[in-house]
Length: 180
Image (cartoon, rainbow, N blue to C red; front, side, top):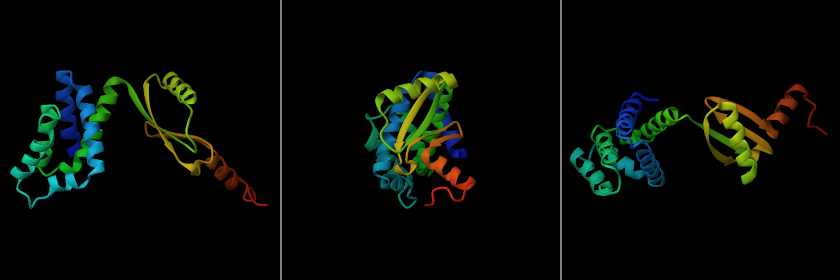
């Protein structure tokens, strides 16, 4: 994580935690992140040094005043004023990481070849909670290249139980595997 993200995202989290606003600020940062992802030119505009800082900050104020908490608005203005608007996503991630750590939440990315049934999602969530002792926040992604099975990315580790991995491992051990 960059120094900018640690400083700005960390400061916002500290302020939000002191005021009991962690949940609200997190929700607002996620909404903004989705909006910026849908319209990346907006952050480019806020990062454009050829536009005076005052004008860029006015754009932020006009766009988000009365739409987000004043802390989030001032956070965006600070990033814009100091030329760091392009680091919003990293700052949001730092905030989210601090939030997850403080609340015992483990983000997990589950990759499968097909849509996972609600019953299987529930079983997986319960199992991971029991194994890790944390609340898990699972994001599911479909990747047909998995062929079958599931891959879990969590806490810097990867547990790969996909058919693709098993077939690659088998073919490495047995070069004639998979050949007619």
